[in-house]
Length: 123
Image (cartoon, rainbow, N blue to C red; front, side, top):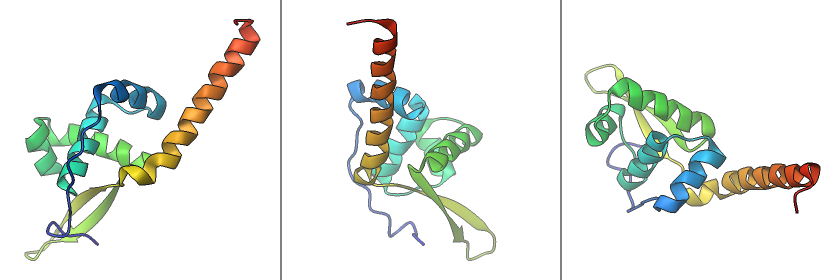
């Protein structure tokens, strides 16, 4: 389990021309990409911190994080608080670990386009 001190952030920014491609191929929103990028920069974070950084409601951030968790781009861990209760910490999957997922989605999209071209008689 990671704690806030163990999270190592790295400078990470998604180039503008790649954002549109990733949004389409991976079914991610602009907010999903922004949150993933922020998590990579921070190393890990809470909903509250991301909400403050990005300037969106916590419920909006949480919905986007759920999408990222469902897609395997982020994992959620529970942090037990000393005074009782718990808090969720969100940790990004390293971009190099996502290479296979992205490549698989790209190949699927390419096959669909090629199939369309063959069926429509374009070319």
